Length: 285
Image (cartoon, rainbow, N blue to C red; front, side, top):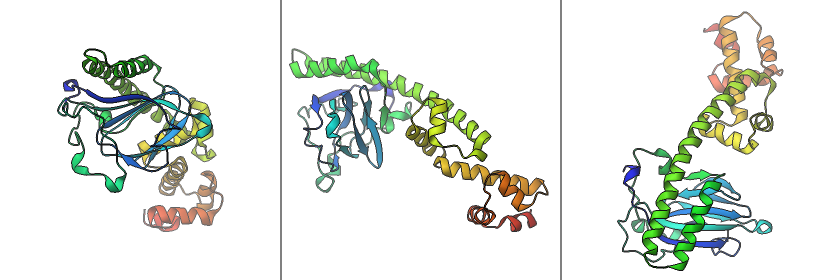
């Protein structure tokens, strides 16, 4: 499906205090239609599938139907959200009343709406959309909630139009975030390659680039499938390989140069990674 062919349908909108919500019991639930949370105030977190997301004011998060999620309570920071249940098309316009989510054991997969929709021109909308800083969407989310709550003439059509504008804005924003993240990841990887001998930490990298340490690690895992620690070790071992192949330095010297002064530990890491000890690798070069 092409993104510019969407005809969104709003099924339900509400402002909710998540501390009082029935979903706030720490147990998983699954929705039959798509979900949006927009945080007005307070803090909390949500787990969607196996991934955790920190929620704070002006966070926008959207996920697809049929995906398990659970809200993780933070009573001291009661979180107030605007929540929206919707479809990307009007194919299920006849189902106008809210469809309650189910616990996973009771969930009926046959009841999932729009389970086969996939965007061919905007990949970010095929998975969870997480925008932690979206104040530009706040006024539209408030307008959406107020329009739905008042239910004046043509409210459904007006809600659908507002949601379409929200989705367009978030589509542009996900493009910007993707481009910015790609540039950020490239800069972070360059930094690690220059400083891997110094064992950089997420805190150090976060401070340098102006991001939370958890966000730095999440970016690395997403783009490299490795944590920072694993990536640093990978850099060290690749440097060791290069030196084994191109220099006559002793194994002790190489281990010391890449800041793994324990030669036995270096040898174990190397063998685990390359299925050969450094000495065997050098002999077979």
